[in-house]
Length: 116
Image 1 (cartoon, rainbow, N blue to C red):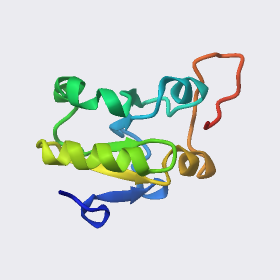
Image 2 (image 1 turned 30 degrees about the vertical axis):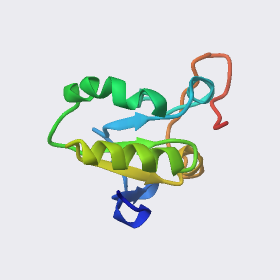
Image 3 (image 1 turned 60 degrees about the vertical axis):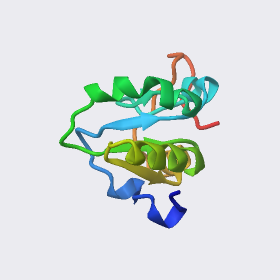
Image 4 (image 1 turned 60 degrees about the horizontal axis):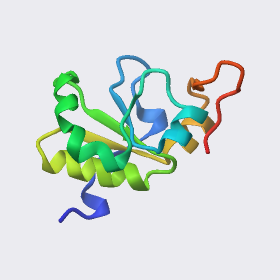
């Protein structure tokens, strides 16, 4: 069993500005309201069944995992690392992403992106 202190974690300000491999594990309504443009959406509950899709991710870069504030992404990060992936939890999640002024998009172009 992994404990929180064993899960690799990075703050939003320490993330690469480009070529970022970002996995968003929030629920569909959260994703639709606002997400990072380059993120791939995979709700936490779907990660075990959809791990095969992650094989298409570049294997020379870590998968940064994000949720709203960091709890769900911590679980996903621990799971991915236990299954052979190099994953890093994004501390503070999309709340920190928004606070740091990183780009966000919403699924509806007439709506300003936000974090639910």
